[in-house]
Amino acid sequence: MQAMDTLHRTQVLLAPKNVRYVSARASQAGVSLSEAIRQILDDAEAREPVAVESVWQMVGIGMEEPALVGDLTVSENSDLYLAEAILPQPKRRKAVHRRKAKS
Image (cartoon, rainbow, N blue to C red; front, side):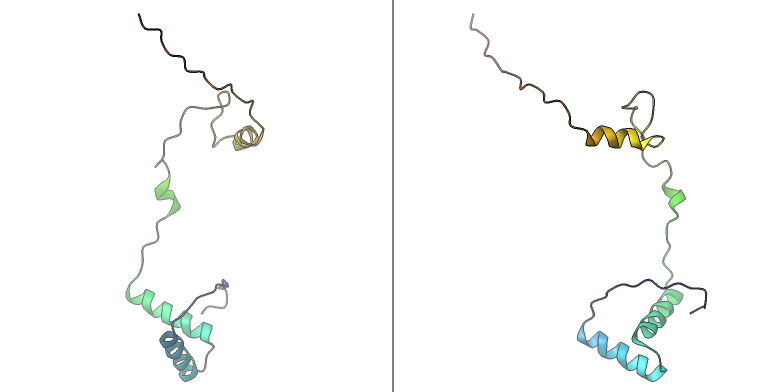
């Protein structure tokens, strides 16, 4: 691990056989369990790299619907949409369905 790397705390649930393996590997290498797990993951990543999609590949996937507040789009002024979503809406009267008279 490089000195500049930052670590992310997470909780991982391991099966007993996984704990035994990681413990033995950590003991043999003289490192902590966390370091042993990082080494195992680094080895796996070196053998089988996983392509991580760039966020820029997702740009333009969705189409924005017409503006709901004036001519402002959601992406340009989300505060207006949030305020509109939070403010209580006037209650609408329920539609009364009437039967048509038979001729």
